Image 1 (cartoon, rainbow, N blue to C red):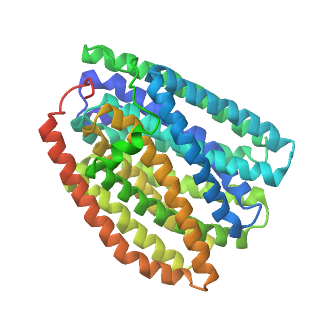
Image 2 (image 1 turned 30 degrees about the vertical axis):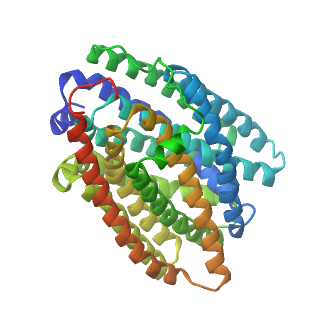
Length: 428
C-alpha cells in the first residue's frame, strides 16, 4: 500500500476509503469467481448448442428483475437495499449448493443455476460501482479506480484458485458457502466505506435517504439522455463481441473435455490467467496509462483487444488459444477499460448512478447476450465459420472506437460544467 499511495498520488484523507474500496471489490468478485467455473461447467451439461437458450432465459428473467430492483431502490435508502440484495443472494448460493451436491434434477438445476449466476453477478458488481462513483469524484476516479479495480482482480485470482482446488475435493457446497461468506464481508466493507467517506466529507450522507421515482425510472432516464444512450451502445457492442467469443469458447471446450470436473478446471485456469495479467496491469500501468492516453484511449483498448482475440481463435481453435486470447482481452477489459468506463459515471446524477447504471449493466448487457447468442446459433446453422465472424467484427470495432472518443469528450465537458472535481463529495 505505501508504494501504491506514492504511485497514485493518494491523499492522506483518501487512504482508509481506498483500502475499504479495495477490500469491498475483492469480496464481491471473489464470491462470484468461486462459483463462475461451476456455472460454466454446468451450463455445458445440456450441450454447447443449447447455450443460446440459457442466454435468452437469462434475459427474460432480467426483464422481471430490473423493475423489482427499481422499485426497491425507489423505496429504500442505499444503506438498506445494498445489504438486503447481497444477503438474499448469499442465501440463494447456499440453497443451490445443497441442490447440486445432492444431484437434485441435475440438468434442470444446472440450467437454473447458470441463469441465476449470470444475473446475480451483474447486480452485485453494478451495485458496487454505483456505490464507488457515488462516493468518489471524477478526478479521484482517474487516480484511484485502477487500484480499487485491482482489489476485484485479486478476488478474481483467489476465487478460481480456490475453485480449482476445492471443486473435486470438497464439492459445490463448499464453493457456495465460501461465496456466501464473502458477500457478508462485502456488506461490512460497504458500511465502513460509507462511514469513512462521510467523516472525510464533513457532510450529511445521502445514502440513508430514499431516491424516490418509479420502478422504470432507469429506462426513462436513459431515453432522455444522449450520453446515457451512448453508454447503452458501448455496452451492446461490448457484450455482443464477448458473447460471440464465449460461444466459440464453449464449442472448443465441449469438444476437448468430456466431464464437468475437467471443464471446471479449464475455466478456472483461464480465470487465473486473466487475473494474473489484470493484476499486473492494474498495479503498474492503469493509472499512468489513463493519464497518458486519456479516458477515450483507455476505452478504445477494448475494441482493439477484441479484434486480436477474434483473429487468434479463428486461426487456431484449440483450448490453449482460447486461454491466451480470452485472457488478454479480458485482462485489458478489467485492468484498463473498466476503471475508465466507471469514470464516465462520476458526472451523472445520483439517480442515474443507481437506476440507469443498473439498467445498462444488467438488462442491456443480458439483452446483448441473448441477441448475440441467437446470432451465433444462426450463423452456425447457415454454415458460416468463425473466421467469417472475425472479419465482420472489424467495421463494428471501428464504430466502437469512435464511440469511445465521443464518450470521453462528453465526460470531460460534463466534469467541467458541473465542477465535480475535489474531495469526497455529496453527489448531485
